Amino acid sequence: MISDIKEIKDTEDNHSDPESENDFNSVNSDEEGEMTFLEHLEEFRWRLIRSAIGVVIGGIIVGIFITWIMDNVLLLPAQQTTPPLKLQNIKPFGQFSLYMEVIIVGGIILSIPNIIYQFWKFIEPALKPSESKYIKSIVIYSSICFLSGIVFAYFVMLPTALEFFANFGSSVIDNIIAVDEYFSFIISTMLAAGLVFELPMVSFFLSKIGILKPDFMKKYRKHAIILILLIAGILTPSPDITSQLLLAGPLFVLYEISIIICKISQKKTAK
Image 1: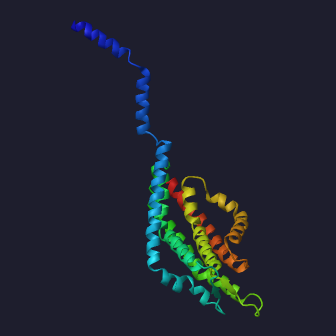
Image 2 (image 1 turned 120 degrees about the horizontal axis):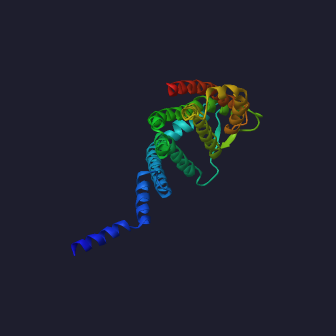
Image 3 (image 1 turned 90 degrees about the vertical axis):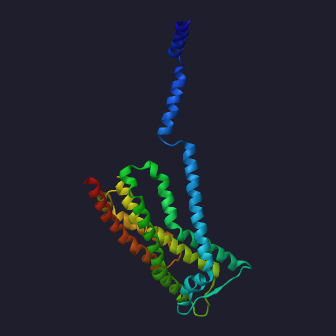
């Protein structure tokens, strides 16, 4: 009787379903392998949530000091022109909308390090170990580059452009600017300069993964100059050539710095 039971168990083991074994192996391979599409979506959702939380915290900080920021930072360039620019509000809820806009944009600017960090952590699984180790450095230097662009726009580009607006045209016509147009101009100028100053970090990463090479950048330097002038013309809200050249000048310098960064990056990779 016992021998018969053993024979039945042996036959069951020998005739086990191969499809169930394959399914089990595929499940294990999925668990040990790459993330599924739904897992990527879930990861992306949480990265967005963490980025949004950072923006909210930054917006709360800006909201606490909003009056000082408006009077002593954002409205100050208009008061320093000769003659001073006159601003007016022509909408019932104009100032309230402006305050909310400044709080949101200010929250984004303050949370830039967190936003960049969440972006790189999301794409980290697609990077090699030799590439992912640079994430912290990229976050730090990208934040510094972006904030440097904002500082450059505030202290160099905005005073020059606003001075042009204050003195251009007939003296009979008063230059009274709608306050929403003024804020749109200064915010877009600072954000554009911040993005432009990210060029060295973009070049560093592209050179690390082998897409961008210094020889390529040298070969097409003349084409890059034309492209830089076009980008400066598009990103600069003011029509005067002075502010466009003020943005194009640092772009030329950043392009040359990017070539040097590509060289250093590829030398380290070769070693």
